[in-house]
Image (cartoon, rainbow over all chains, first blue to last red; front, side):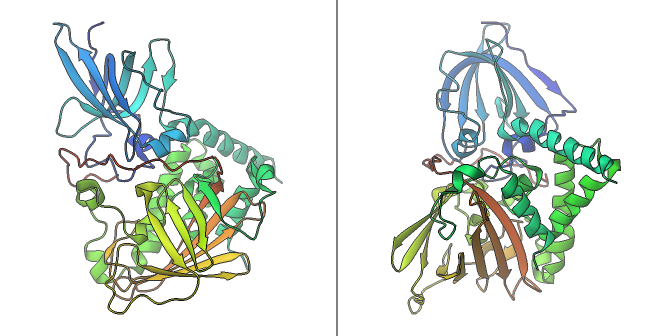
Length: 148
Length: 264
């Protein structure tokens, strides 16, 4: 397995709301939307559950030490709406995941983006809706400029 | 006369491409499974709760060419703040204002996995299944928290001495094609906008199916002489989703640690 890549950024354009707008509680007391972390690792378990789906990931660093990461998602109710199933992430699968880390606990994050080994990108429901909503807004602006 | 907000919701429903499939469903019945609304700006704005003030604000923001380069999410967030600051806040009593808004880090749903009270549950995202359980009652079953409410259609009163409960006592009636549900006996708890309410809260919900049959619209009026200076009228919408399934809701775990003072 490749060495873990852990990158933190001070300013993160990825909006936590995108992952959690439909959660049963705000994520802001637990996760820091102003920072993001990216790790690569092997899926140990994906619990497709409510109120939140949870992923356990084995992440190996440059010395070969393995650390277990926990990733929190919106719930099954939310993810089902965009076609996720319990098979969306399989044990043994290599993934690279970006998320918002917790304020106080390491090795845990809230899901923002996953890239699978074959390049498939998984995004939260709200992020998937963005293009559709922006297109509607552009159409609305176009009609406005064309109206007499 | 219909408000602009109502008209907007109606337009949303008419614009949804799944409308034709749902037209065969009876307009006079609300029974069945409803879920998250279609992906349109206004439908998503009202996916949990919205007000006419918020809808008007969002329309104004969208109609202003100066905002054409701002993301829709940013405009929606601004309209949400507007409806909180102008509509909701202006209706809270001084006592309710003192603790408004509750810090999300103090949310008992987060800290203790405590299911929501009525004033949050009815605005919970995701599914709402409406079922007739018999001639005298209906059930409202929500995806969030897997919560179930019984709505008595025979006008029965709560039992003598019955203490206020999380979801209260609900009586329903039909006014034409509109299901009207009046609920009282609700234990003091939180509203969806994180203000506190008392056990004097009374909620009237009006459920209607939009003309094309594909959308379910809720207009809820909340009255609480202890925490609200005047009634608050809130709206939300769902889409017809007969194949949607409410999954188990049994893996809630309190967080290891929370940080106070961080707004959502």
